[in-house]
Length: 154
Image (cartoon, rainbow, N blue to C red):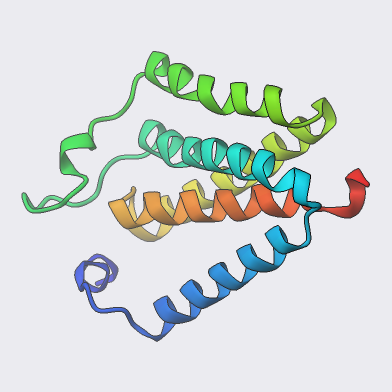
């Protein structure tokens, strides 16, 4: 039933609320940064948040079986080598843009988001869909903004 509902392209009440909440939270978190930190934080969040979606493709099965699924061509499980290559970009962004202790905090936050989502998607769906990958990326991005925008680093 969940997969059928997710297939519907209409934006429902929960989807609209999530969209408004995510955009509002991004705005507030980015607006709270010093002007010189916005670009490095955007760089890190952009690269690092996408790794969570890629990691889900490594650890879960694709659950849609219909041929019209948009993520179907990418639905094979990634090898460890592919995951490590994908991790190079976020690692480079973190090394270039933030301090080492911030890097550890970002990695810890992203790992927590990933582990929670992986368990939730496995329990609720038995794997992932393209929508799950998008949600993982958005939540990872918000986690990066929360950590890097924290007053702990001031």
